[in-house]
Length: 496
Image (tube, rainbow, N blue to C red; front, side, top):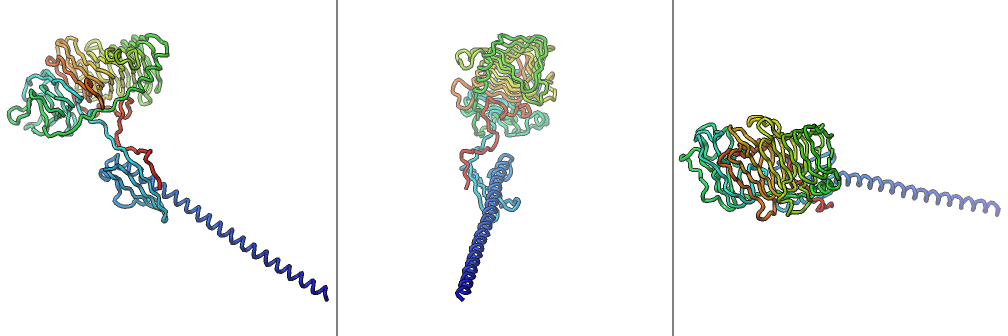
């Protein structure tokens, strides 16, 4: 009997133990179920947080695109949330503080990004025919035919706007401006009388227009000697000029120990992206220097000393850097002719290909019989985009005898000098045509920076034409710190 009670007791303990194990397993199972469920919820939330973040980032990019493409006005804010995938985003841009806010939402999860936007445009000086910090007088003669200011017999400076923007300021000065030449707008309207007195190429000076300038008086003269609009208010907006990247390359060229190099009646062809370093002078005479694939990267020729290009062809997408024999010796470089480009006669030119760039670390001289590729005559339709950049000064000089009205210099693109640009058309020289823009001076420059001087031009015709198609993309030029649209200031990027 005792034995039966003992067996019954053991069975009771076994049952209790089994039940306990089952309870524990159920608790553990429940815990695992809850854990897995929470992990699934957490995973889902992480996914939604990630989706909300990407939507918020999409909002930032969309607003930036709007700002750079003139969509949604100037504020780049969406009128209502934009649906995308399982969620949406909404952006707000404060045009005063330049703060961009983007909010993304997915299934109740919200992410927010704030970032400041830098808004910049191409400096206005590259958006007109002629601009500089200070000016001397712009010379001109009486028009030979009052009904045709485009008559090539006119002698003097002729500045005009070859765009359809009727309000374009084509001449701008930070100092006083005196005009005796002509400042007009596009030829098409001028050739269709009656002439519209409001259809003019405007000139503006922060210091006022000089008292000797001729004003436009409707009815008294169809083509006055100067046209401008008194109520234009603006700034010269010169670019920030930075030569450091060029100077590093010039210093590298000095170490090559190549000595002077002469290319005479030969053709030099380089693959895209090739860099040629020369420690001495480089003289290119009767030769062709070209890029084997002009649509690829530029060929770059860096010369520590001076460069002379004489009746030669520089092919498309070639960059030539002339060091002037120093990297940063101002006393030497401001008087050193580092770059000279010239031709021989009206049958033997120096021709500059499309997208060529020339940098002079000193002074630059552009002489007779230099033209952009295809510019055999003023009527050629080829559009060049050439850039000549000089750290100190540019001298545009013609002195070869001329018995006709052909242009001796026919150039399309930018001529830029940090200090001054001198036009000197000698008595026996020829006419000059520059389409694109001429700029002297840089942001923050002080006197004597920014002079454009017209010397002996009354015996010849000097055309300076603002032609938008001839101006290269400035953000591709290392010399200028140019922001051409809206960019994010990532140092101010905040996520919530």
